[in-house]
Image (cartoon, rainbow, N blue to C red; front, top):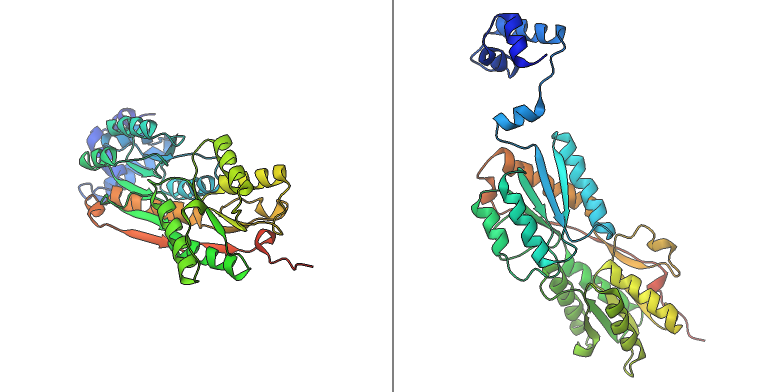
Length: 338
């Protein structure tokens, strides 16, 4: 049973039946009741795909993220899907694998009208935002979350990276650390720069020097990162603590410490940004700055739907900052020296 057949059964025009089913003010209450009753009798179901085409909406949103192996993005996607399902939308997930050129190619693909809006977290290699400006010019609703570009005018949702890094570094200092290394993931990412600034400011406010040799710029290549960490731990000026700016770098530190037989937390204390659910099961358990990933996903999606449903809302440059939580575990505990 389709709309044409239903209209024929009712001896009404297709337009009148369609308007009645949509509760249009142009159709009388009596006619609406007759149409709805006949539709139920004949088991007529609205074709959502055809309906979305008529409204020029795909009922689909895109989520562009660097990876899903990171627990943060897995949780954020769960939050995104929870809101999308409530709205009857599908979610398409695109992975950039931290590749800037792939990120550009994905945004080009999404400009053909296949999605009603885009949620994006930038790759660590994103050096400029021309591709994001193109999305705006095409008037495609865009919301950035977590890894955002500060220079583009669009809604953004992130965590309190600077404050969290400041508190995390102070926690290490309170537990006796004086030579703290920081593992950075990218000079391009705002989250990496904010976390580094929090680290540097905490050192300075506690009378400690910020040494360039203690700030290690890592990459997306695990073996290279391990080599850098190994070189750091073998150096004459070895750190007594390492602050990892992202989850995978904290795990790299654990691997290298095991190889070099460096005891955590006796010889080296470790803390890192991570939503790793198994952090408590590591040996020793890892102290983490845990972000509200699920809530960030929900918040970003809620803002995106405001833009989709009310064009022009994206001119309101909404910026939402959610609070992270430091969960203290064994990897940063003070160890009594006997």
